[in-house]
Length: 445
Ligand code: DLL
Image 1 (tube, helix red, strand yellow):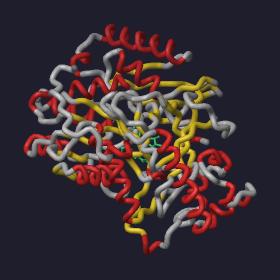
Image 2 (cartoon, helix red, strand yellow; image 1 turned 180 degrees about the horizontal axis):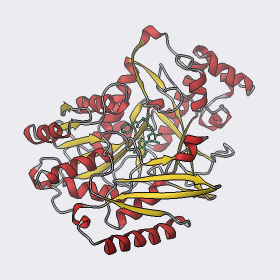
Image 3 (cartoon, helix red, strand yellow; image 1 turned 30 degrees about the vertical axis):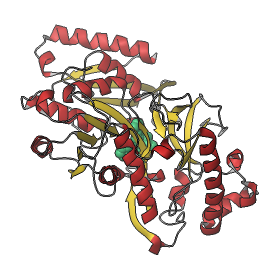
Image 4 (cartoon, protein in one colour; image 1 turned 180 degrees about the vertical axis):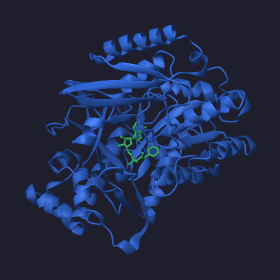
């Protein structure tokens, strides 16, 4: 156990035990029935989807169960753009009670619609995640994901209510007040992005507090990639156990998958989502255990039910039994997105590879990757912040540190990177999803 981490007590094992531990054959049967019903629902109500099925020569009768899933066409972000804003809506607008949306820096935003039934099921998924992390009605749950259009705040807020936690709807930002409320109101669970958790940990230390001074016991972090090294870092600075949670706006938001206390991947809520892994280049469905792009079919959503939606997240599914007793399949941490992968001098580079080298060498996750191109040659620069105690090093020591990091990066990536060590606090902190890659080649194209 990390120093400063408090003792863990699990008062409740599951939020919906009958579903979370359902016999796998029964679960497949449930998925089949729901799939058949959902295909009929989109066929009847979404002309856009009906056309896509017709183009493949399909009618709902061709989908009799899970074994026919592969026949359905994929949906991608391009379809969402084309059908924006309401072309994929499957219920009358008057049945919808909510929208949420992505932060979408490029292209059109994704707008997802929810009926009250959809909100309920989504909150159940988030409640499962909170209970799996050891949460119960005895907890005070500080939700520091952004509220508003982003799904993080709304989803965890709803889940926390369902579990019966006292919910602190902090939203992101105002770090001073976050720490004050955490202490004054006795927050035991923190929900936010891992980069904001790291920032809160850093601010706590700066204020002269130790992990033992705060009541927090667990964190539920997601919405962006984070490495095991970053998990250990956050766990020790906040004195908690940190759990991963995954989801995307298109499928409702957080809670599509979550970690249990075993932390051997995230259980996908398979009664609501069917997961497949495909080859991102050919679209071919890959055998279980293969690494590829995750595809989801939402089988219970009413208003915005995407079928075979390509997430672009690259991961592996694992069906080996989990000792927590949950029977739902587990997904690995996304190893990056197929559209996150940078090709630098012909080599595939994922930001997560760079992050694990930095954290393994004792640096924090405050870094920025800058890719550029001059004279037809790609350059890779990594700006890394020094911890205050390293900053006093001599120029020679700093240069040595830079060379050592460059060596480690070269052996991880197979290509050379230039490292620049920067003064403490020189890289902007993130209150939501961190922006760690600046690809100037893309800005020019
Ligand atoms: O980030 C939903 C969410 C909110 C998940 C709070 C977890 C907690 P979007 O903004 O639509 O939705 O972004 C979805 O974020 O396709 C992944 O690439 C990435 N992502 C989400 N969770 C994780 C995670 C929310 N645990 C996109 N690890 C997804 C790595 C994640 N990447």
